[in-house]
Image (cartoon, rainbow, N blue to C red; front, side, top):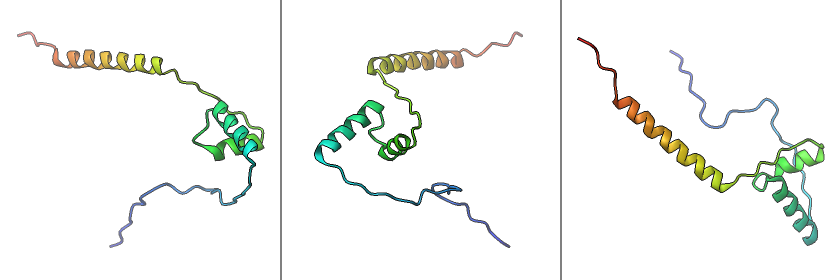
Length: 95
Protein backbone atom coordinates (compact mmCIF):
# COMPACT_ATOMS: atom_id res chain seq x y z
CA UNK A 1 0.00 0.00 0.00
CA UNK A 2 1.49 3.31 -1.04
CA UNK A 3 0.66 6.45 0.82
CA UNK A 4 1.04 9.85 -0.69
CA UNK A 5 1.78 12.59 1.78
CA UNK A 6 0.17 15.97 1.36
CA UNK A 7 2.59 18.81 0.91
CA UNK A 8 2.45 21.28 3.73
CA UNK A 9 3.55 24.87 3.41
CA UNK A 10 3.92 27.36 0.62
CA UNK A 11 3.34 26.01 -2.91
CA UNK A 12 6.40 25.87 -5.13
CA UNK A 13 6.56 28.13 -8.18
CA UNK A 14 7.51 27.09 -11.68
CA UNK A 15 9.98 29.97 -12.04
CA UNK A 16 11.41 30.81 -8.61
CA UNK A 17 13.32 34.02 -8.02
CA UNK A 18 16.83 32.88 -7.22
CA UNK A 19 18.98 35.74 -8.54
CA UNK A 20 19.92 38.31 -5.92
CA UNK A 21 21.44 41.77 -6.18
CA UNK A 22 22.91 43.94 -3.47
CA UNK A 23 23.44 47.69 -3.55
CA UNK A 24 24.26 50.40 -1.06
CA UNK A 25 22.75 53.87 -0.69
CA UNK A 26 24.01 57.05 0.87
CA UNK A 27 21.95 58.71 3.60
CA UNK A 28 20.40 61.19 1.14
CA UNK A 29 19.62 58.41 -1.36
CA UNK A 30 18.08 56.32 1.39
CA UNK A 31 15.81 59.20 2.45
CA UNK A 32 14.72 59.71 -1.16
CA UNK A 33 14.16 55.95 -1.59
CA UNK A 34 11.95 55.80 1.50
CA UNK A 35 9.95 58.81 0.28
CA UNK A 36 9.38 57.07 -3.05
CA UNK A 37 8.24 53.94 -1.22
CA UNK A 38 5.76 55.94 0.86
CA UNK A 39 4.37 57.74 -2.20
CA UNK A 40 3.89 54.41 -3.97
CA UNK A 41 2.25 52.85 -0.92
CA UNK A 42 4.64 49.90 -1.00
CA UNK A 43 6.52 50.49 2.26
CA UNK A 44 6.20 46.84 3.22
CA UNK A 45 7.22 45.32 -0.11
CA UNK A 46 10.48 46.90 -1.18
CA UNK A 47 11.49 44.18 -3.63
CA UNK A 48 8.24 44.51 -5.60
CA UNK A 49 8.71 48.28 -5.75
CA UNK A 50 12.32 47.99 -6.96
CA UNK A 51 11.47 45.42 -9.66
CA UNK A 52 8.58 47.53 -10.96
CA UNK A 53 10.75 50.66 -11.06
CA UNK A 54 13.60 48.90 -12.87
CA UNK A 55 11.37 47.43 -15.56
CA UNK A 56 9.11 50.53 -15.84
CA UNK A 57 6.00 48.59 -14.90
CA UNK A 58 2.96 50.43 -13.61
CA UNK A 59 1.94 50.08 -10.01
CA UNK A 60 -1.29 51.30 -8.50
CA UNK A 61 -1.29 53.42 -5.37
CA UNK A 62 -4.28 52.80 -3.15
CA UNK A 63 -4.87 55.27 -0.35
CA UNK A 64 -7.17 54.09 2.42
CA UNK A 65 -9.20 56.52 4.47
CA UNK A 66 -9.60 55.22 8.03
CA UNK A 67 -12.97 56.90 8.49
CA UNK A 68 -14.37 55.12 5.42
CA UNK A 69 -13.13 51.73 6.61
CA UNK A 70 -14.80 52.32 9.99
CA UNK A 71 -18.03 53.28 8.20
CA UNK A 72 -17.90 50.10 6.10
CA UNK A 73 -17.28 48.03 9.22
CA UNK A 74 -20.40 49.53 10.83
CA UNK A 75 -22.45 48.77 7.71
CA UNK A 76 -21.23 45.18 7.81
CA UNK A 77 -22.30 44.91 11.46
CA UNK A 78 -25.81 46.09 10.54
CA UNK A 79 -25.94 43.60 7.68
CA UNK A 80 -24.99 40.72 9.99
CA UNK A 81 -27.63 41.82 12.53
CA UNK A 82 -30.31 41.79 9.82
CA UNK A 83 -29.09 38.39 8.68
CA UNK A 84 -29.46 37.05 12.25
CA UNK A 85 -33.01 38.39 12.39
CA UNK A 86 -33.87 36.77 9.07
CA UNK A 87 -32.48 33.44 10.25
CA UNK A 88 -34.57 33.59 13.44
CA UNK A 89 -37.78 34.39 11.58
CA UNK A 90 -38.29 31.04 9.85
CA UNK A 91 -41.39 30.73 7.67
CA UNK A 92 -44.36 29.15 9.45
CA UNK A 93 -46.05 26.27 7.68
CA UNK A 94 -49.82 26.56 7.26
CA UNK A 95 -51.83 23.69 8.71
